[in-house]
Image 1 (tube, rainbow, N blue to C red):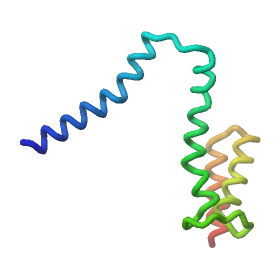
Image 2: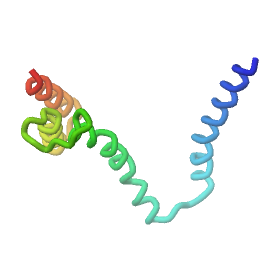
Image 3: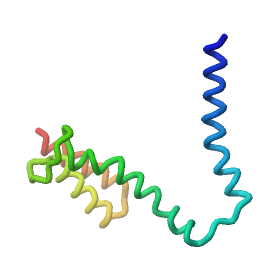
Length: 102
């Protein structure tokens, strides 16, 4: 019984942590500076997730042309910038990574 209470409690706490900011933003007007700052949060989070994997394969910093992940990532970034198409970006990046690793 204690296990189920702990699981239910953790679920409620997790739900509350996600609900409170949404509930607060409905009732509070945020300033222009905050809105502009929040606009770049998704890009910052995404960069923090994938950048270490590009420049540190295996935990060692590697900016060389032998780093297949870095080369494929840079080409994928270029494709994304030019085409604005996520499917082309994924296809080109994954295909190039596969070719460079074989």
